Amino acid sequence: MPKTKLPLNIKVIALGNRGCNVLERLTALDNQGIKRVAISIAGKVFNRIKLKDKIELVNNSSLERGINPENTAREAILEAKESILKQINNTDAIFLLGNLTNETICYEAREVAKLAKQTGSLVFFISSTPFPFEGSAKQKIANDMKVILEEEVDALLIVDNEKIFTQIISAEEALTQVDKVVADLINTIIDLVAKYGMINVDFADLKSTIQNAGEVYFNNISTDKKDLDTFADELFSKNNLTASSDNLNKVLYVIYAGKDILMDEVNTIASKIQAKLSDSARIIFGVVNDENMNGKLKVVMIGG
Image 1 (cartoon, rainbow, N blue to C red):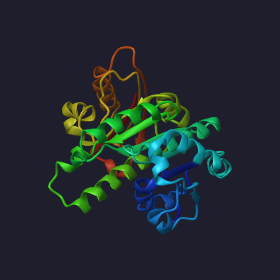
Image 2 (cartoon, helix red, strand yellow):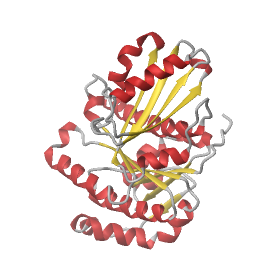
Image 3 (cartoon, rainbow, N blue to C red):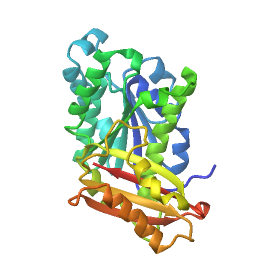
Image 4 (spheres, one colour):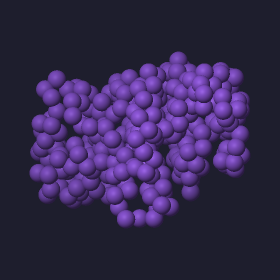
């Protein structure tokens, strides 16, 4: 498949085993010119993953990593600082993948995010909630780590595993579905600013919307044009993330539609979205022609 060059320099960086497992399966990103980078201590997953760009961290004992994860992470990233900076310099946006229930990995992600923000990058962190069977202790760690990550990461996108696992599917299918959600998140966010439209949004619009936003709300809804009465309810509720659409201060959304879209329909969509937000919310929107959407439309929204 030929590569499609994006107008932005974007990298997806995985930390730890779970992040590297997901990263290894996101091969389609290579065709868009998005570089994948793995950062981890040596281990079965890191050694196996076939990527050109890998940064091996100093391997403190597993006991030490568990006792003081914050110091361990800081020292490991400091040791690899020059290698990491070579990867992240002159990068517009960075998507970090990691395990929200692994404290050391989250502290490492925070340190990488700190370096990235010093270079001017917009930094996302993508992970998923603990599996229901992992118990309340893991959920507490995940909640605590969200707070830690928000110190340096611009936007957290947390996939709600429970929403995915409510379907009766095999464990392998469920994990594949989580990977698909992660890949769709990355691709759809990139599309927001990569595609030119009748009314454009650009990277500066995205950055001003979610910079230092913390956990963000994101959704992507497709509908028939005749169903405009109900689409807004779905846009503000039916998604695979944990974040709520309540009390959004800044929102960016893009309407993807065929050339048959009418300005009256654009106005209807805008009015329905506006009605769901507070009067003080700052709204940026765009409209992109998509030849595959005649008779249908898609709305993608992100906000914090």
